[in-house]
Image (cartoon, rainbow, N blue to C red; front, side, top):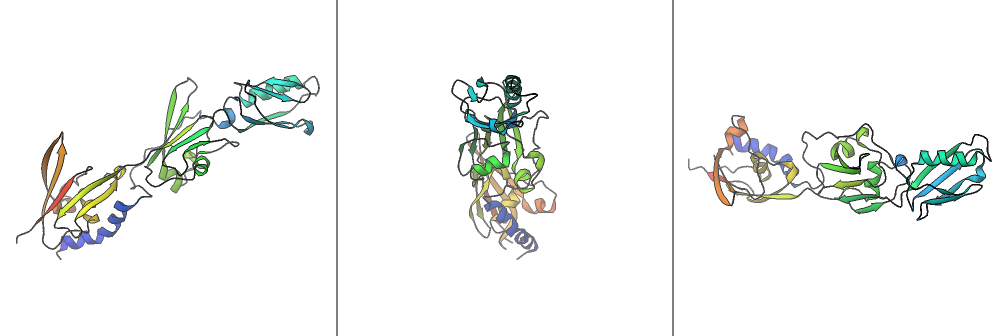
Amino acid sequence: MNRVAYAIVIVASSASVLAQSTLLPQQQVPPRALISNQTQSASDAPIGPRDVIEIKVFQDPNLYSKMTVTDDGRIAMPLIGKVDVSGLTPSEVETRIKGLLEKYINKPDVSVTVLEAGSKPISVIGAVMRPGTIGITGNITLIQAITQAGGLATGYGRTLYVLRTAANGLTEQIAIDIDDLMVNGNPDLNLPLRANDVINVPIDASINIYVLGEVMHPGSVQFRRSQSPTLLQVLAAAGGPTDRASKRVILKRVVGGAEKTFHYDFKKIIDGRQNDVVLLDGDRIVFAESFF
């Protein structure tokens, strides 16, 4: 085995694990989360029909209420009867109830909490075990929502997106690096969610690259698209070159419907004299045989 082949074999094990992993994407420079300083939590969202809310009046425990907002946007409380709360935030409902209670209680202290947003549930879609809607319980965070959806499923990408309606009525998209959130535990990325948020965990499609010629394990090598596999990674995943391999590498790629051929010297790539080559789905790599 020549020295070049020996160097490739040394890195073959780690690169092969990288190519075959279905759980963790390749470490790359992650996109930082685009988080607004005015991000709202579930407690700031307007109340709507079928929301479950909890009301506490600290001067009188008998006035404690846990109820579901009716379809016409109302609740009913002792002493004050029906109260229209639809479209109001919890703090605005507190102010309204305080005003109605003042004729019965001196300076009432009222707390309103949304226990479950039945009218505007959070949705989790994409690469999770149980995609669908979840109800808000208190101030739910991004990790809690993913957990309620059964956790991440095989094939997730490196970035998830939180879609929500901004104050101007437009949809904003917040990008979150999954490794930084779930592996590194960056607390800044564990967003408090609000009603009607949509969490999209895109599925990272797999790509196949075909390795032929003088390699230890010729055949198809599978990567995830976000890994942006290179020629050296594919060579390592194929077990490295054989003793008969020359330095010549032929890349065959379909461009615009026509097949094109490119030539490289993988020894120069190893030595850093030539840039490594990023490969695409369906590329065919042929490692030529040395005749000397």
